[in-house]
Image (cartoon, rainbow, N blue to C red; front, side, top):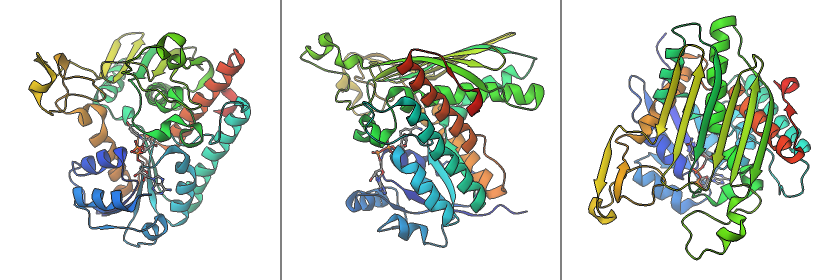
Length: 392
Ligand SMILES: NC(=O)c1ccc[n+]([C@@H]2O[C@H](COP(=O)([O-])OP(=O)(O)OC[C@H]3O[C@@H](n4cnc5c(N)ncnc54)[C@H](O)[C@@H]3O)[C@@H](O)[C@H]2O)c1
């Protein structure tokens, strides 16, 4: 059967929308048309459409969804909108790509009961799963770590013998997000542990699910989690420093979190996320398996090193995400999007929709990642292990 042409409408015209457009354009072998965009800010929408040479802008989400030519809606919008706009797009019969994390609990978090937050977040996720099934549309969960070439290679390498992944150690850290939405729980649904931690959690679950499917035909699910969170940028010593290189201004979101996840085969994952790390983004995962060790240096890696005695000597050449200076020896990334898995992710999504098959990164993965992160918040607040088994 010939592949269905993909006609894309983007909702959101910020950071994620930009790298989505650039990487849809790298997908070979399919008929892909990025038709138009809408966002909250008409001026930025027009500027985005001009810069990326899109055919048109839409005055509203409703106008975009009413375009009968669009058969893929790409949600590059703040986290609190993933749930309502998925329901809206699915009801309009559109296939959906949605950025991470899937959804969450969206209200002020300071005194909120963590268990109620967990249940509310799960309710949102389950409504999304139901709406996708009822409306018979495709949903692709935008977890790029699943598609990072090093994670895919790790999965294939471990499949070459009857490996048991015994322990995963992974982290996503940098010096703080650019997006004001990420600093307030009512928009972001959580702090570093959720917004950044969803990446290492997503990759850890993907690798253990893949191991389970290979060995016994079903995923190896997480069973419990213990965790800690903190606001390290509120420490007296940091606050009193004059010059700040690390982002501040978190309203009710933590800037550091770490969890210890246990799986049903008794294996473990130690996963950390932080907004307090200088020196550029750290996206790292090591899997200690019974017959091999794999170390995935998504970013930084040593594909290319540069040295310059002063920042200005490299002009405005891009080096890598969230780096403070080009001076000195640097882990320069010749193709950061490729190492991040963005072109591979969008290729899988477009192929999945064109050929009517499931993507590698599914709504069910997004739901489980969210359950793990919210379980970690309950554990951090109570100081006790949180049992995930009844939710998986
Ligand atoms: N996979 C990754 O590595 C990665 C990286 C960055 C962001 N993200 C995810 O992408 C999503 C967007 O983040 P971002 O960094 O692009 O944010 P951003 O602030 O740069 O852009 C958000 C966009 O959403 C638009 N928007 C807000 N409310 C809207 C509404 N009601 N209707 C229509 N448009 C609306 C804004 O106008 C803006 O264009 C988030 O879910 C984030 O977690 C993923």
